[in-house]
Length: 260
Ligand SMILES: C[S@@+](CC[C@H](N)C(=O)[O-])C[C@H]1O[C@@H](n2cnc3c(N)ncnc32)[C@H](O)[C@@H]1O
Image (cartoon, rainbow, N blue to C red; front, side, top):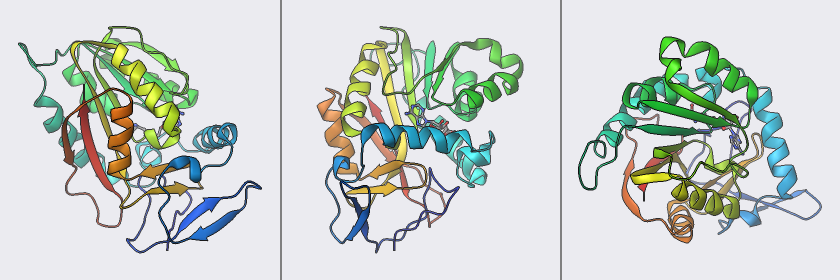
């Protein structure tokens, strides 16, 4: 049975034996046993998909627990895993990524900016569709917040990173809010936003099979083969992919992928 209790959205509780919902044209649902292969099969109208997500996030408290759907307790495990992953690429010389400018995509209240990106990078920009979260980030980053250049309030489907500005573009727990087409286009624009040696990192929930919709926060969770296909369509290669370990058993698997 697919379950998505309100408030548990980035890391949805799910068991391996579940049904899928297919969205019908009249916006009702039918239950089906086969995993849909693309997200277009599971979302309804694109504009409603985005508007509903925006509305959802507007009523989420601007806290770490809010960002992690009630799983605030896993934040340190997540950040430590990300630090270990990222540090493999940072440094100087051929193939290495500079610790100059980073972009935090779907940054929320700046949980990742604060504990992962600001300690490692000279400058950080944040982009998120929810202004209240960016306001909270600005207010809570403290002295280190002086290293933030820009707080962009914008949906990633519309966001254009400045060409050649970023050493690392970090995209965590937000790709499920983009349609397949918008994700591919966004990744292409991100590639244009990289400096030489730059890296795009996606860290997100991964479905066991197919595409699983979350009706509560208006997102989808894709399986790894689909995510890899979309990355390839964007013209990017996967440099490294790793599963985040030590997360609670009942939540989705979380994978980190480094792209160039
Ligand atoms: C699960 S939270 C993750 C926040 C942050 N990445 C973290 O891990 O702490 C998802 C974030 O994505 C933002 N978001 C949702 N849809 C978005 C979109 N289309 N474009 C940009 N941000 C979006 C929400 O406002 C929210 O801050």
